[in-house]
Structures are given as C-alpha cells and as structure tokens.
Image (cartoon, rainbow, N blue to C red; front, side, top):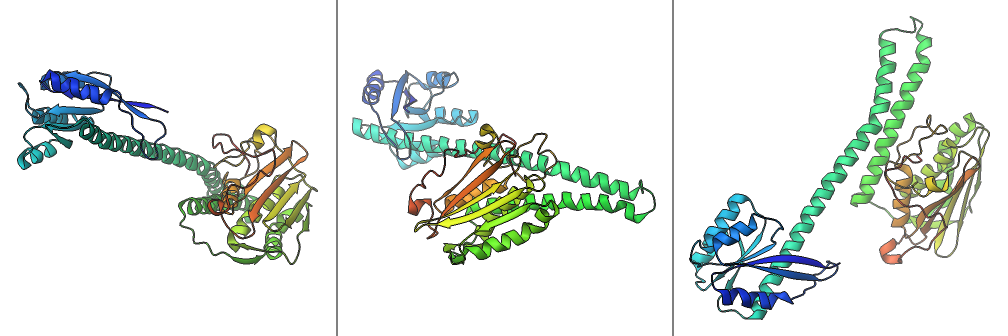
Length: 403
C-alpha cells in the first residue's frame, strides 16, 4: 500500500525551493518491513512566517526543510516556535553556515538532521530518506503503543467482568451465612458453602488458564521437551475428570497405544488433554459418552476427543478458539468456565507445528482434534501445519464461546 508524505520547503530563495521540489517530486523509496512505496508531495513557503502559518493548518506536514538564514525569521526561530506548539513535524535544517554552534542550536530546537549548501539531489534524497524512515518507524511505534493500551484496557475489562459474577455470588452466599438467614442449623448451610467452593474453583481455573496463556505468549514459560509416554498422560487426565464423569454417569472410553512416545513438554501435553476431556464432560449430557482416541504416524500425534453433548452451530464453532470466548445460551448458562482453555490449547498446538480444530452438530456432540509434531518442533522449524478439517476455527474474542 503506497503512502505519501507531505514535505514543506521553507526558503526565501525561489530557485532553491523549486530545485528541492524537482528533486523530490518523482522520488520514491521502499523501507524495510514497510509494505508499498513511499512518495512525497511538495509544498513551498517563501519565509519562516509563511511556513509557520502553513504548519498551523491541515493537512498535516510530515517533513519540514527549513533554511537557516531567511529574510524574516531564521530557521532556528521557526524550530523554537514549533517546539512551543509541541508539533511532531520532522525538521531538517538547510544551512550554508554549517558550524558546530549552528548545529548545537538547531539540535536543541528540535532539528532532526542538517543539509549543508550546496548539496546534490542525491544528498537531498538520502537525507529525506533517513527522515522518512525515522518518521515511519516513529509512527509505527506510536501505533503499536496505542494498540497495546487498547488491548490492555479490553483485557482488564473482560477480566473484571469474568471475576465480578463469581465474586458477587460468593459475597451473597457469605452474607447468608453471616446473617444466619437459613436458621441456626449448621447443616442447612452446606449447599451454600458448596456453591462458594464451586465459584472459588471457577476463579482459580480462570487464574491458572490466564497464567498459562500469558506464559505461553510471552515465552516466559520454561519448556522441557523430552520423550513422553502419551498413554501415561492420558490416564492421568482421565483419572482427574473421572469423579465428575461418574457423578453424571458419563462413560469415558480411551484408545491410545501403550507404547506411543512423543517429544513434548509433559505439562503442556497434560494442559491440552485436561482442557479437551474436561470440556467433553462438562458440556455433555447426563449418561453421555466421551471418546478419547490418540493415534500417530511418523510425523504427527493426533488427539481426538468426542462427546455426545450440547454441540455447536457452525457459526459458534468458527469463533470458538478466541481468548475469553464462551458460548452463552440457555444450554450453557449454568456451566462455569474461564473462556481461555481452548485458546490455550490452540496456542500450544501451534507451538508444536500443529493446530486445533472442531467439528460439531447441535444437540448431537462435538469432536475436537489436535495435532502435534512428534519431534516437538514448532511452526518456524516445521513450516505451516496442514489443514486438519474444514472447520478450522478463527479467533474472534468478541463472541461468548465455549470453555
């Protein structure tokens, strides 16, 4: 995408202004990491006063080429006036008096660079090239800083919203206990205490998922890749969710070769399995079924977790792997979750050069598929992972989604 920078040439010599305009009018440049060409639109001012007048009006001037000695205001006086206005225009001083004193004064007044008369068109273009590069990088840094502030604000807003409901519930339950609203029989308060513990557990899950996500994205999480017996991790995961499954008479069936070994960080593999299997139980119907199948070829380990639960529409599935995304409807309203588990699963899968996808039918069930490279290599080393299914989910954090 092409970008045009507006250049103002302030010089009381008409010949100098026209020469600069001719040299830059057809000048185009490309900068590293910047798409498209950068061109220049040239304007002229015959004095420092005229330059300041133009700089006070839209459209914005990006680069100012200002002569040091003019009939009225000097170039340094123009720079001083701009500094008082807190203008962000990038100024280049043109001077026939390239003394150290002049350089110090101009720099203190905010000059980015100098161009000593006489100069060639090539010298002019090189100076402008440096100024344009600095300007583009500076603007990109400001844009990224603003984006970080926006993302941080949205993140804090979402986090506050996610914590507000369980905290409010716990506070309400504790008020019931404090006021002895259910009488003096201690056993009458057992369900209230249980609800408090459930809500507290939900907050703990949110915090742990959040820590996993931030450690993964920041690279701060220490990874220990080593041979892992997948069946051992699978059995540990199933043992963890078995009480919840048994309480709702949900059957868990496992197919995983006992001898299957892959290179992975054991805790990362367990995070993937725990999120997939716990979701399959959580969003299942009573007396339902969960099937966990693990297979492998020479390159990939594939984990498939199917359930007979609530299921998803195609639109919901396409938005499932975003941060803080949960499906909120009549079927899921009573189900607690952090909205981060599946996002963490996908991030981890991609660290192993794979991906996470879902295929689902409402009121029938869902099948989640995760593929991981057996050598533990990530996307950069292994190249892009192949498409696992047509239901490749995008990350849209704005929809309430599962987990």
